[in-house]
Image 1: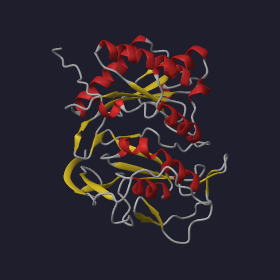
Image 2: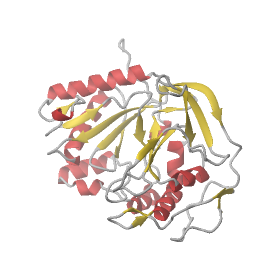
Image 3: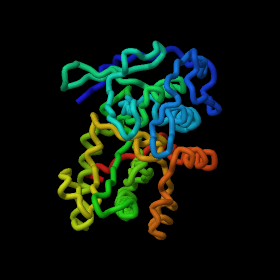
Image 4: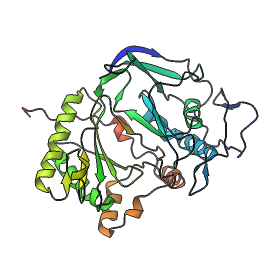
Length: 332
């Protein structure tokens, strides 16, 4: 897999302030460029509906990302980004784009990461370092923002270990919480704290902040061992196997996300569902309340909900960026 080639394009310091939460957009596209934090941006098709059920437009997508930028950008900076673009909305075809578009503005930062497969020797990823770049990406109808688990300055070192809890047919988010609770107990026994967030769909993501020297081999090995242990405890309700025919009536614990070439949807990213839901950081108390009441609707958040949460709570996912933890070694 890719190893960083240490070649990157880092643009000059950002002009102006970072905050632009009051960016307001008319339904029609401006006739000329607009200024965002000192950068000139040409926006297009702002009245195009990207979420047909809600009548939610591209202009509203851009406005959400502008308003959530203060808490979102720290989770994007320095992380190679894969775009997931929906040019004709969530009900139409989409495509992933790892190579940063060649028509990008000259001030968009990129990083080259060597590739062991494919036709190119490297992938030149976008880096979303500032608000103008975030708005530019949103204008490409990249509804979802998928990042590597490592930073571009050392792509061989994951900053987190991640579990993706995905309910199979007949299961739901409440069942995911039951599995997450067990994971939390296991992690506590290893001296590790964890931070949950919704997937923005039916599942749950569990992040284990590390921010210390570790390899993907180590995180993947531990994640797989823990997933298999839970599967052994409750094989009727949990599976660690990739095969889809094993998932009916079970929670699939995807430990394979802990790989240097795989991406995970970023916290505060929109999801391409019927409604503009968001992959939202939540507290363990919120999960416990939803579990006790068997009410998964409590954990479904649209972009408006998330903006209100952040105004009240701030970034409750901040420990993922700062908390330093070491994985247990075999001799520990």
